[in-house]
Length: 373
Image: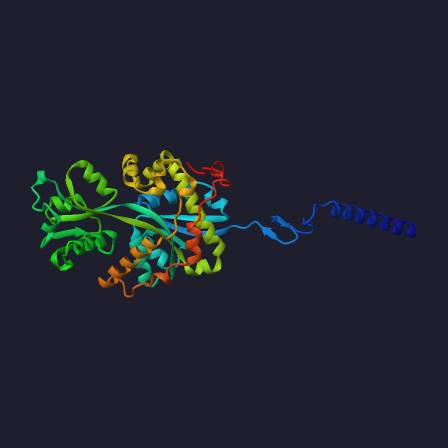
């Protein structure tokens, strides 16, 4: 009886072994089983020379809702699958002011941030261990304005600002623009009285607290359309992308994927303006008509013929000169303790990646999906 039992057990084991060997022999080349494993299965595909493992890297991104072009990008990355397409998992955070965003990114709580060129240089000049990795184009205008003639303004031209009080927000693109205009007109900062306001408004002109003021979009566009102010000088300020050097050192491929995500986001914005403007309006409470008016000067955004290969966000030599000018201004004005060296806050490999065109033959716009309305 015992012999029969033993033979039966041996027979069962042999049959099981034959079944397993047969299953393994029928696998495709390079595939692996997950026998004996529990939990989620990672798909691994091997060839004779390469191994590709599907992996997502988490990237923490901050942006400011009041900077409209940046708002477009932040909302697009938040509400579409663009980051996922580029093997990234995004943690997207909106900040009300750029200063609060800069404080957070400087503290290491973010891996990347969309900011103005001025704020990027200020952050690095104050010790942030980061790189400027991409160019986002114009974010809007920065104008010196006075009350219109109907309000009997005493300032009729830029030369009339000498000895006058000028309202602006210090340590911002508005501040830099004012000093730049003075230099262009052979004047000095000491020739005017700068009054600092956290939030310049029409009220500071109407109350005569300041005789002129430097406003930026979107407030500038709203006031100009109202006819209550007149522009004496205008300029533009630009957007950039900051990346933590530590994050780049640990995740270089993720940074390249993020660069590509920004290109795809710009293309999505340019071809879905109505949708994205609605998102921005919901977040910023700025009517869509003003959102469009303040954003149309950005070449990536306008892109009227919707050409994917027009989106090139690399740092050009001219823009590098602009960054150098900003660094020199901020240091000369004693706004930062150290003047950043542009070569130290940029990386040539990333610049080259940002300069590349998206291949229109392989890019499929229909693969970009809206996940949140």
